[in-house]
Image (cartoon, rainbow, N blue to C red):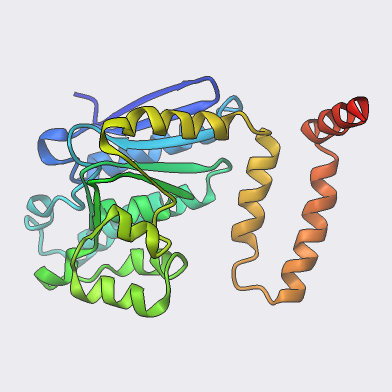
Length: 250
């Protein structure tokens, strides 16, 4: 069975974690397959938006602890951690917007994957959590991402309590962008990503690039980066077509 289901059409690359019998728990093979799917979609010029979903009832239950428990080698654990970190960075560095559609539970590393995405949409009954502390583990890599999504105190509470938050609360604290009713979830997700894919491919990519490029900059540096991106965006074919269409209408 393929651990990742992949298809790209109409500007949308669809990546599904496909280990439903294990609630899409992340083992080395699934992490590698996800990394490959992200790279594949990044190289496809027809892709405007990437959608990550989970097969079955849950988005992803996190790292496969049965697999982790088999090794006492620190170097092997370091390699596993780096491979997951590589996926999180691949999502952030992806040239197109990446959307996580969360149903059921997104826990631990699964919550990390969702948090790394540029946008999160969730079913009303979904829950997102970082329960690592409950087993003496640290949600270390996701902390850098979560810190950029919610307030410092809320982040600390999420990480040290280990309790999952329901989708409506996750939206209220800024972790989730949209919450859709369970009965309408698939249709609303489809509508959401199709709307994104209808936008200018260059504008989507450049907007994402600017957003993360300005992390850590002073206000003056961020404004200057905006000046440069503004000027660059005016030279794209999409902008030229947009300008010509506006002039024609006026």
